Length: 301
Image (cartoon, rainbow, N blue to C red):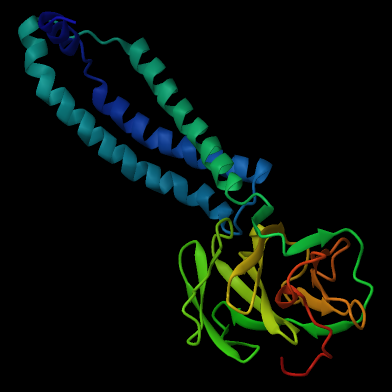
């Protein structure tokens, strides 16, 4: 495109550009916010505070509209002398209307895209599988030999994890929880992606004569219905990790260890109060240190 033609196009910027800037900035954010709220309710897992977005979105839109108006005013004043020297200022209202509809449409589409990408990060599925554990369809038939204990509750509990002679502590990151043990150099990172934030962690030792492992249940926000299940061996190597859909209540015991027999490894039951609890059992032929134990509940590991 030649330079004279560009100059002619710039001279055709209409006087309504400040109003266009205000409507484009404020309207696109408003459509984005309301689109996100709508699609969160339709296909997502809305926050308990999502309703406040309906009230706060117009407030932020007003501030963005003022900013857009000022930017549009600067653009108009900057090019107005050129328009006057040309002797004509063409107000192409239909161009602004189409542009405004396009911008607000993009805002609505971005709201949907935000929800889709947000939910994709929280899809249930196995994250780490070394073959040491497997999910079994049959419910655990043996008695409960151990229940998990709370080691972290948001704003209430935060204590070390005692298991198999270890005294580990937890360190929180944006998308992970790190297990730190003074006696071990290895520090595994348990992902919390898709949980938004952690409100509860329950731990239970899984012991055999040759060593004691640990199972962790990391629960995300209450309305998010997601949790991370992780099993680590005595050396803190992650053996199994899965993001699951929560089907138990906030006050329920989410982790149980069930005996499977005198010489058989124990089963880990996640969500025993659920209609279909998750049952993890050591894979047949796995090394002894990866197998659970049938130790009576209440005895120290």
